[in-house]
Image 1: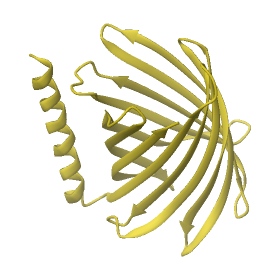
Image 2: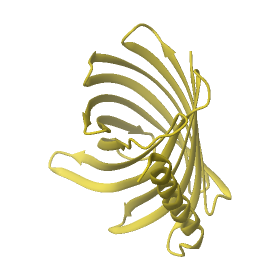
Image 3: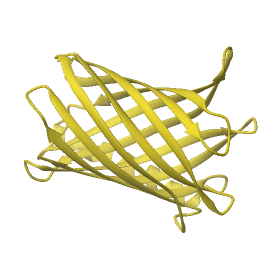
Image 4: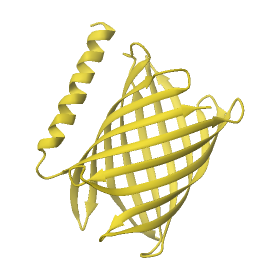
Length: 220
């Protein structure tokens, strides 16, 4: 099976899942858009600025917006660390509520056969003015497939979210599975499109959302 055939099979699966999201009666269809500016500060360091918008209720209602500023450093070829701050506005009961979220990250990177793997660990302190603060741990495994063509590379990822409300009180309350495609449009402009199945635990019940996302990154 050649690279073109493998990529066609992957893209076929991508669009089948995306089209299924419209007919998923028990879940919501959402659109997420993220704009990223990446500034290289040196050989191993960079500053990343990010803004994200989300539409839910079958993509009819704008319900989420965040600003994010972070710094990352490559300690080794296989190890990256960073920190940042995210300022979030989320629609709750008809009003946009604020969340302040400083965070720390660590990434492990390695190759297996022709696959590129990345395991990201992230700790967030979530400060609210309308509910109790909490700490959240996120772990995301990304596998980049070796079937890219014309600077387009498919991938899949799995991310779990565990919230800590107080000592000995923690809960796995979100999971995200994604299929996506990274594309290099120019040397400085990169585009990522993906389908995500997001599962949230709410009042003891898991609720799914089907997300089509688009990320646009500019590198300076």
